[in-house]
Amino acid sequence: EQTCTQIIRWNQNWAHGCDFNGNELSHVRVQAHECGPQCDSTEGCTHFVWTKHNRGTCWMKQGPVSKKDAICKRDQSKVCGVA
Image (cartoon, rainbow, N blue to C red; front, top):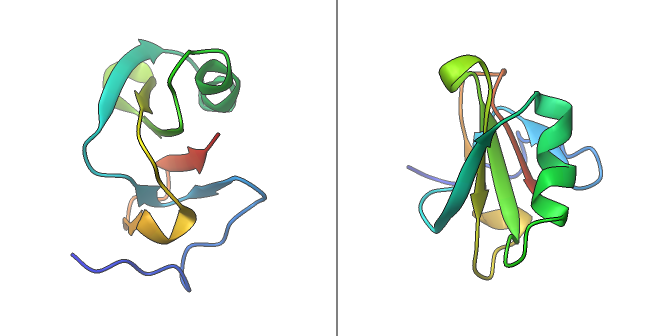
């Protein structure tokens, strides 16, 4: 899969329709708007992905990452972001 930064429309540090592969740290069931703050308050979390899985799951991830690493997804309910 190719990255498609030009299609991902970043809203400061988050965007719809994107994903980051791997580097799982932990996950928690929260609403989409709570995912970024959850990552910010979790030690080691550098980026995150929110999906509709289990009625809303925030997948917190670790390691060096930039917006260029985001992968485009057709599913606009997915949210990804960097801390």
